[in-house]
Length: 84
Image (cartoon, rainbow, N blue to C red; front, side, top):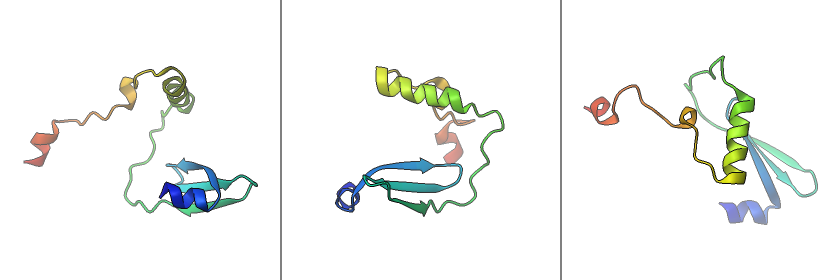
């Protein structure tokens, strides 16, 4: 997949999980937007802290920090119990 994107001239992309779309950018400012086909997703929490999540991501990328507890999936009950 990555090879196909590179051969098509894609240099970077952006995934918008709220708007359910991906945007692919070329080196000469061309952009292609494609939908992310997901249905039935819950809405984003009203108290979602975008600046804090952005800082978490930048810290991990720049300083190799571990994920914050807020970004780790924690089911309300053990997965094994929910599968029975």
